[in-house]
Image (cartoon, rainbow, N blue to C red; front, side):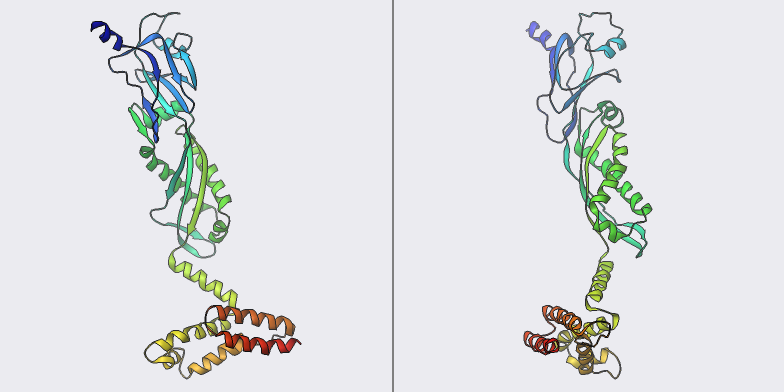
Length: 332
């Protein structure tokens, strides 16, 4: 019984067998135990080991199998003032660090970031994406992040890293001077810019930032609606055509409401009847008298606009076919 007790006091094999997902740092249990002279240290792939003596950093070991001696523990030998050889057991804390890449780490703006856009002025932007990282320098990570905790996990670090990402995002959006539409159209380049900016901050914690992606940039709903309207204007043509198109588009809805077509006619302006508005809308949309283009060009342009009206249900298939037949006669 006494021999069994003594055996438990000395460690001759040190290794991290059960490397759990989400664990970044693990302190090898050393309570009431000492490391035997000549003990074996096993550091597996995707691991790093660090010896710490009374709070002071000592020797670091990468993947491999080591026999602990004054040769393999030069810094610890110096800290403990050992002679060239030592025979007695010693106490020291051993920490293992996972160097596996922590993938699919998500970030996102809980509240919109207010930036000044050169096209829209002050706007509120939301963004989200993913990134991945791994421990590259366990000494820095130990001193600044994990410390003497028995276990340190990804979830404990998540909030700090997310804050770093959002701070960098706000800084870049505020100082880039790039229009939102340009950033949204080239998210890969924007991701690369942010990754380069963030890599320096990650390195300060002993981490390497391996990937960083901006997956979406979104505007407030009211501004998105404005952009949709703007796109519709470009699709239909000039402002007059856009107003006329809206008038035609509103007629099916007005017919379902109390007051029918008369209600929509009254809302469009005093003295303007629904029939007149509809006629103006279709006359303008179907107009084929643009002097700056050939009759053939105008015909095909009008057909394209008619097709858009057909797709949106504003005109029927019969109306479209009849007008198409009429227009095509002009180019025969």
